[in-house]
Amino acid sequence: MPDPQRLRNLPSVASLMESGDVRRILERTPRAVVVDAVRRVLLAFRREAAGGGAGTIRTREEWTSLLLSRLPAEIAGGEAPSLRRVINATGIVIHTNLGRAPLSEEAVRAVTEAASGYSNLEFDLAAGTRSSRLLHVEERILALTGAESAHVVNNNAAAVLLCLAGMARGRDVLVSRGELVEIGGSFRIPDILAESGATLVEVGTTNRTRLADYETAVTGRTALLLKVHRSNFTISGFTEEVPAAELAVLGDRLGIPVMEDLGSGAVFDFAAAGIPGTPTIRQALQQGPGVVTVSGDKLLGGPQAGIIAGRKAIVDPLKKHPLSRALRIDKLCLAALEATLRLYADERRALARVPVLSMIAEEEGSVRLRARKLVRRVGAGGGAGLALSVEPGHSSPGGGAMPEVRIPTFCVAVTHPDVRVEELEERLRRGDPPVAARIGKGKLLLDVRTVRDGELPGLAAALLAAAARED
Image 1 (spheres, rainbow, N blue to C red):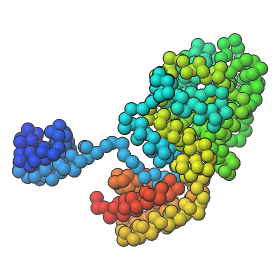
Image 2 (image 1 turned 60 degrees about the horizontal axis):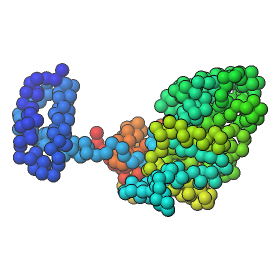
Image 3 (image 1 turned 180 degrees about the vertical axis):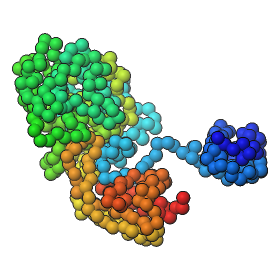
Image 4 (image 1 turned 90 degrees about the vertical axis):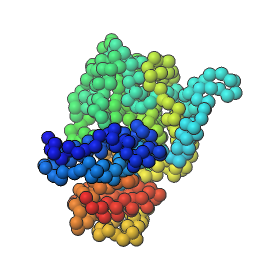
């Protein structure tokens, strides 16, 4: 409990608001903002008293002076946006906790343009009539994927939910036990199935599922055969699974649609670039499933979105489903998605302009050069007692994409004789700009594969500040 003797002279909020110093602050800052900041500082004083024993007994004037010294920083902190840009030095390219795919410059400009005024979101400028917002992206998706029809909703979980509700509500969906995955945030395929109104029927075992398992489980209630990409784990050893092509043949023979949730499906062919791990949407559809769903903000490198691509007979009815309105993509994401898809018209341009692609495919020599630039910048800033070295390591595509793929990279390894690496990591995370890094083998590791050249000055300054700060 707070010591009443320490706090007896604390000024009230009302008296502080009438003081000359606070009145001068009110000339440039809204009253509500100042009141909230004053209350937070007073609360901090009470918490400090609760953990500090008897401490010093201050006069009212001393408390007021101390509060006024803290008030400007408290106001600034309260006014600062909660959502902030972070320098990603983890080496995880599609980092779910850091917002997944960073957008291309073209996509950012498109979002700004759409956000700053009105647009022809659902308006046909030639005919002067209402139109569909999907027209802005549908043709590009069809051209890139080879699908007969395409639909877009606000994320891939929504895409899966819509497909299940539209195709299998009140009926059975067959899924291999080895594909009943849980993705980030504790969202599970069985839960999404239940919410869709469909009934889950598990087939096979965790490690081995055969085509006969599906065929045996089919009944008159079976509406869909569902294949789910294991987005964030692998099963190895004594295993067996049914390829999508074989499942599609079975589905066609029995007259039952086949759906594949690719999760992180790509448009760019990473395998052709020497990075195996995931099929493109076009390749997946060529295996025969009637519909495929993917995320827009993973390997595609665009905004959060869920893309549904496949046969017209399956996809077109989904566009008219009641859930489509609830799950529809907003104008800002639509603008970013269109700009991203436009870049894929030229694969070389996409590789250079879509950040996810360029980071994953960047050559090791280029990453090493960036690491050396960071070391030189820190040295030019005085070094602050830091010991820096460039060391090889491995980056990850992240975001549940290519779980087995490890990309060779280079990290700046950091230590300080007087500051523990755990403390350095926390200081960077709490700094301005915030920096997300990782720790390995007793060193702070800054993987510069996920750091852009334009971020190097800020990263160097943040590192120097973290080393020099006294707590």
